[in-house]
Amino acid sequence: MAEVAEATGISTSFLSHVETGKGDITFSRLSRLVELYGVTMLALVPQTRAETQVVRAEERKRGPSAIEHVEFFVLTSRTDAPFVPVLCVYEPGAETGYGTPRCIEFIHVLQGTIEIAFEEGDTLRLKKGDSAYLANGEAARSYRNVGRGTTTYVSVLDAREPPS
Image 1 (cartoon, one colour):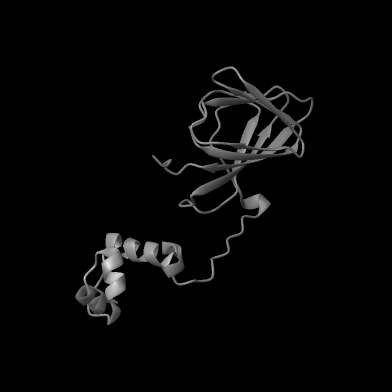
Image 2: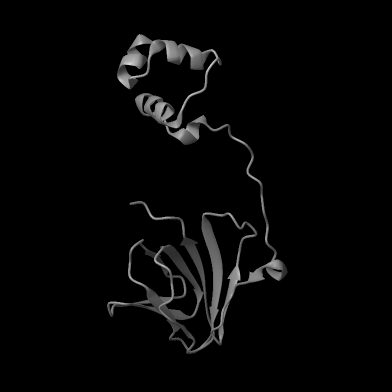
């Protein structure tokens, strides 16, 4: 216990109090212990069975879209989910503007061809079966169906606060 106290800067008496359940520990002290032992905070959380949530095709919610010929369907029932999976359906020629928030996005095209244009002028064209990972901080983007038929893709957005 003396070695742990020395390595973390936490007194042996305090460590003893916490160990015997007579005291509580702050986050900053706990993080020092976690670092010393080479584990993550997640390792300290009791493992529980994740609550399975199913969204049936007929139950999925249509997302807000004021754009003609574009539909968005939210593929989760969780409003607190850190990742938001969305099914995007674009009719031929349909396009969304540069209103996309700056966030991390993963895209997988199920059918058709989508062209993603970035504010700086670069474009990225994805066809059926293609995937793209758009990193945080990339410029706002627009999406346009450049194929002859409907383009459908799954977008997974990570809209959490980006690390500083």
